[in-house]
Figure 1 (cartoon, rainbow, N blue to C red):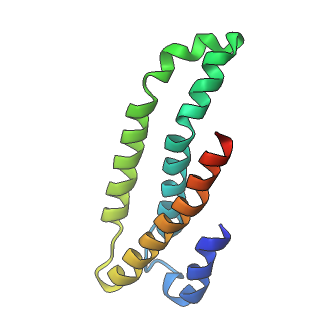
Figure 2 (figure 1 turned 45 degrees about the vertical axis):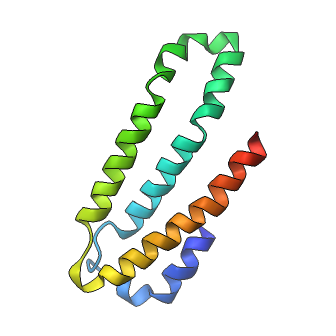
Length: 113
């Protein structure tokens, strides 16, 4: 949140109002997709190693498909919300969001393992 807010604060006047629809929502959607995909194998290991949770094992086969659907939905939402007047800012912000996700979620995954 803090790393994304750095770029957000610099362009606060541009983001206010309805100039860019679903701006913060798409950023949080990318975060949710990254968390779901990254920790899917970790959750799978927990379910497989805990006998009390074995009734969830049939649903684990769908985690990759759900990740793909979440990614596709988030990508399409991001593309649909691009505005002609603000496209440079939006692409820069998307790149910054991806960098932040790689730095935080990627590192946390390796710490967990």
